[in-house]
Length: 438
Image 1 (cartoon, rainbow, N blue to C red):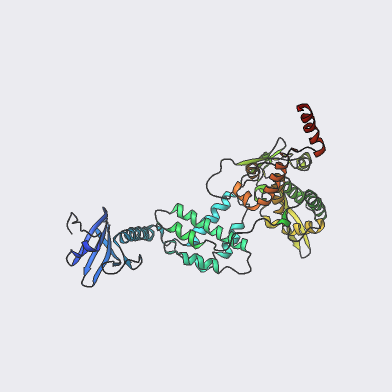
Image 2 (cartoon, rainbow, N blue to C red):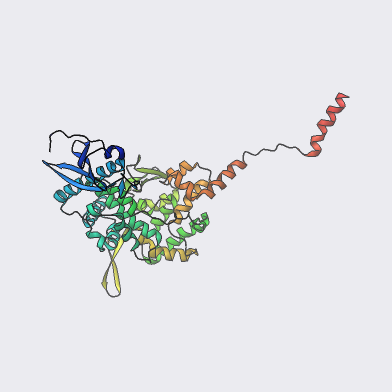
């Protein structure tokens, strides 16, 4: 091969017709060349790229010498150039992966993600290990190599999830897997195919309609919320929670925060009649603030105050007892520790709901829904309500539009002033002015 490449005119079918039989090349960059092999019945596009001191070569497809290009099997010059670059990027990534990654699989990156997430959560929350362990690591997808992963693999995994799972659960499992793969795409981006992120996005995309807005039945009145709090107090005393359950429900109701945020509160986060709610880990990137100050009432402070004495500022504010079974019929408390998962509220919430005489559809998250709507009905700006609840204005507008309209209608009503007087009173000035004119 000559040191200097002889560039051929390949851009149009007419230019290629003037070339002789054989292979003709054109540079795409210093180490990548697009080739055209001219034959009796048409031509083919080729690509070659340098590896150390030699070249590798691959066929891209047919040329559009006699039939129109379709972008898949028959390619124009520009389509062939684009495909050549994609092929070279993928083959180089495969080469690096084969040498440096030693068959990095979905299992490898998922286990790395679980370890990193538990380290971030200080080992308190193991929900990701349960979900990913059951629905990913025990499937055939776990053994798939990342460099050969396709959208069909991910779509097949999602479609194979048990039909008994609720739509929200399917979304949660897919989100966990997507987070693990996105982490791998960032850490190993130089070793993975160029379109790896596109594969993740397309393979795990949900084609179902968007989730409906919050159900009206989940918006509770102030009296219903008070009934829940009092029911929590009664269930706490009856089942021996020592105030732990009552305090959790009370703070959820007082702040409208998510369970995961309340569970991460520390002793230091209670100051000057406010709770500094940690921001959630939802969304991408870093957030401007790490805590959101939320004002709480003196009744809540009075309940929380007894658990503050003789505790370090970094200790979790809310804890609960763990139970162990010492005989077939005997369970005893053996240690205290932080709340780990919202699933720990499932059984006591069922009892609370029964005592408060609420619909079986009401879930603990209704306390958050109700807090948001309470702010809207009070006339606070949507942006303020969103910030106070660690969410976006767009999310508030999407799920609580009806309550925004009601709140703004009440504000607009204050702008209405009487303009037309009583008919009898209005005629007197007219009569006097006519008499004066006469």
